[in-house]
Image (cartoon, rainbow, N blue to C red; front, side):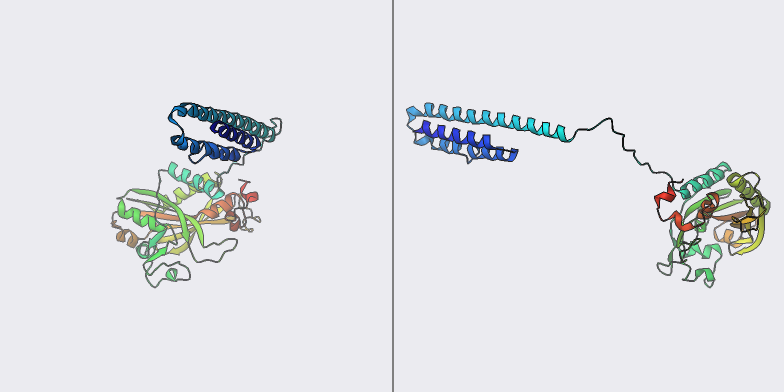
Length: 340
């Protein structure tokens, strides 16, 4: 009676295993017959009802049945894995004779290329590259630069204020003040970075752009040093034949102040579409550091003097690569960026 029942379980298990078409069905058959609540386990639990003298014989029958089922399961699993491998090999075949897909590699943005070139020139002249916070105190952005509370530059139409004392910096000049407070002269530094102004977006304006401020503080610094430094800079940037021209201007933090033009590197100063027929291109603002700015930063204006200048990084990139719309630098159009 027990032997017949075990044979029935074996045949039933073999039938289910042979009809299994995936690993889940195989596992289900294993659980049904060999699991903790399986049919063979139930028979083992009922061994106490078998006469003591018959238990060894019945136990052997149970073990033989278990072994037969396990062997059938193992063979079915191996066959199924082999078939799956054949299927994968057939469907995932790679034709090595086909041309490979080229990986698209990114590259530096035109702003980054221009900045690295400017930094390389000034570092070669002994300048240090310094950075500062983009969220700045009103004191460093205005007051310490000789811009009083009633100055038009502090109008909220031009500046992004977070509160009355904190704002998004409108220039990188605050880095110069922080440097003067932290270091004793001589100082030679440039401060590149992102700045923010409440401008409308057009071909030449953006509410977020980049500036490179520069400053030299030492004993006996004159306007001639400023002129010589900036002339060397533009000649290395635009070519050795580039000429410079200074025009009087006004900045609250420098005195005297000037704007500097460079001869058009496209036409050599003869006049063309690029320079609007004038032969000159405005490039930066500069001047001698105001004595009041030196004094507020803890430097004696009687002993030290210095010069400062500010360059728009986007302007350098637009001029150097002959781009006529600043918006192209920020639209992330790969057709444009891939040209660099």
